Structure formats: structure tokens, C-alpha cells
Image (cartoon, rainbow, N blue to C red; front, side, top):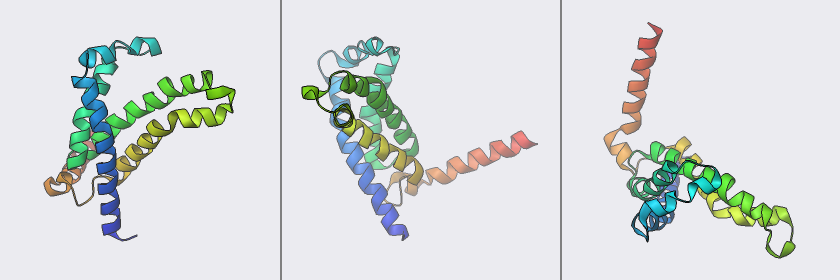
Length: 159
């Protein structure tokens, strides 16, 4: 595959994910009750409340950074963790417990988790691909700088 197609794919994935996460994060942070109302629901799923705050702010700020292509791998990691919890801790158990119309549990479960699962896959792809050339990460050489810091730490640890 040619490099420009990978860069264009990364751009499209970043824009799609960012534009989907942005209104969800905005609603969690600036909606009725703010992030506290969202965080208050976390213990119902066996999760600490602070993860609700982390998820709300991640969905808002990481969405903006993802669109710009700044700190893309970190943004994708945080949003991917949020979508992992949304998929497997929140929505999948609900979909398995209450299939619509008493239908097939597998199809009901897949229907119940389709959006967070798709966003999880996009985040995993962005973690692997990086931001591409059409990003602030590329302009600021973020991946190169991170690789340099990690490389120096490995050398220091080996010495």
C-alpha cells in the first residue's frame, strides 16, 4: 500500500472518531449535572466514580486532539479504554440480559454494542497507524520524539 493511502486512511479515521466522540463528550461535560452526573452512575457497574470523570473529559478533549492529530496514539488509547468499558462492561451485559422482543441473543448483543465496538476498533487502528502526515503529530514530529525518549531510557536501563 502506498504511504499516501495510509496517511489518508489515518486522517479519515481520526476525523470520523473525533466527530463522533465530540458531541458525546460535550454532553457529558456540559450537559445537565455535568461530569458528576455521569460519574455517579459508574458504581452501578462496579467501577469507581473517578472513571466517569476520566471518560467524560477524555471523550471531549481527546476528540478535539484526535481531529487535529495531536497526541493521536495517546488519545486513541484513552478513548479505546473508554470504549472497551462501554462495550463489554456497560452495554454487552444489558444486551444479553434483555434481548429485544425475545429474539436471538447473539444478534441482540451485536446490535447493542455496534457503535462502541466500531469506535474501539477505530481507536485500536489509530494506535497502530498513528496520525499520519496530515496531522500536528507529523508536523511536530511527536512519534519521533517519543521514540527517542523511549530509546534513551532503554539504553540507560541496559547500562
